[in-house]
Image (cartoon, rainbow, N blue to C red):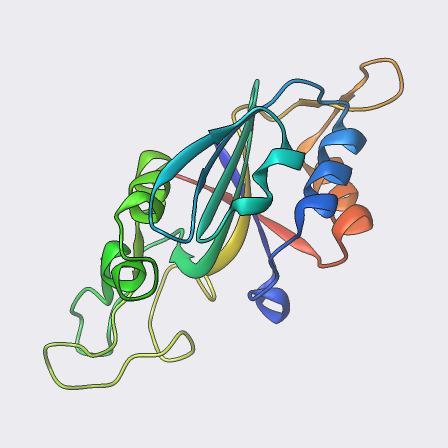
Length: 185
């Protein structure tokens, strides 16, 4: 499984519904399963992206071999540690419970393996921010990610497969930011 995330200069990028539709159209994806959290912290399903305008917090768009993840809060896609060596991450529910009341945003992110976020302070007392933590990858946080199950994703042009590097370029052309691939262990 590969996770495609924006490069560090674009970590805060979060696409709107029309950009997500453009990504799906460029990949030749027609039928999708949409899950979202609303402003009350409840989990909902939508029949299409157009019906997902009530999304507040987290939006998951699933198609065969592909998952688009969009979150109002930064989620960690890789481990992060404080300079003292302690884990710098906390369950993302700690972030969302202050803003959305319910557990749906955290539950949705956890269901796809992205349920952790940066904690405010380490047990050693150090204030943590995205630029001060240590990780195996530079800036292991994002608000948008594309998960692909295989190296090949069906694209446009009669269903010709696109390799992972072609998919990175396609995402850049459709959404703007550059992307990097992260192989999840």
